[in-house]
Image: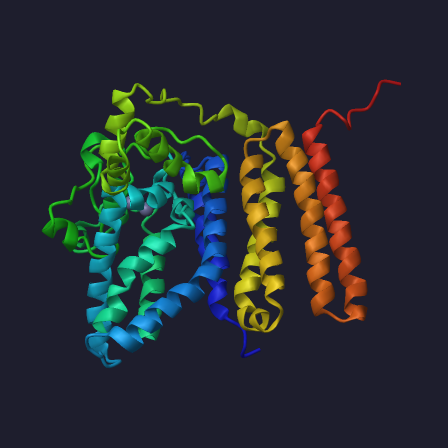
Length: 414
Ligand SMILES: [Zn+2]
Ligand SMILES: [Zn+2]
């Protein structure tokens, strides 16, 4: 039991807060959630966490190498070091985040976090799986100056959790704290597409960096959330990469290789100008379809997401145990989670082919889970597991068919 990684319980704890915010919004009769949007946010987050399970090994290796061979100084593990690390890490975050908005190469990953036109705790989950690569580039500064790796890892977790709680509309102005900390109000401004709110409030924990470097803006008029152009896709993986296609399209209007390459390091504003000059600007549309949400099989998707989060949490909880098993098991379980993140989100705006893909997903996932179980468990436990997984798969397929053809169960007149 001591091998269990209890940190994985952050998943149900964060979702407890998501549930509380949802209930509070219902009670207050405030429309701060849309089902398909929240599902998309969660699915982006599920895929991001999955990327992270594999990616964390690489970033730890990079941090350790820098610390072992290239550190400038060695900080002792004292309270003063913790405090200093808190400030230095937040300072790194400010520049990482500012570059994320002002350089196309970094914006291509960070854009995912800003696509939602709603603002609630689930928006905090909406992160690109590729953002971790950019983040590591900036965090490398911490082992380089000599902060111990375990302290860095703990600090980054605290930093991440703090930012989760910023994504809510139910905390107003916090008075004197607005001068020192990044508050929900300050971060709401950061998510605004109102002209005066663009490229403001980059801070993670302290707002002092924004005040110092001239990017601070208090919340005055109501915030219009999202990007300046609507992002409509329900595909989390497309949300991760679509800006690369936009960049490619803009680069085709540029004359030579060096100007195309320069665009990567230019600003998103420059990209928008190139698109506008070439009359390729997409027509803004408000078709994030509210009426369509009536057709969304919300109970079905919720059950599928809960199961997927269960597998993801299990992978985190039994991390040490999984590491002792063949690596293929982790990859297969990862594939089940990745496929679920895609399909749960797609089904939040159902189309016929999305249902066909769902049947394939259920069958493939059941086959993978049975296969992985057969590698891990003894035959007498398998006698229980195989029929259970098969039965659950059949029930889900029957449920999906019932949702796809809602007119089927109606009785014929006698
Ligand atoms: Zn941002
Ligand atoms: Zn945010």
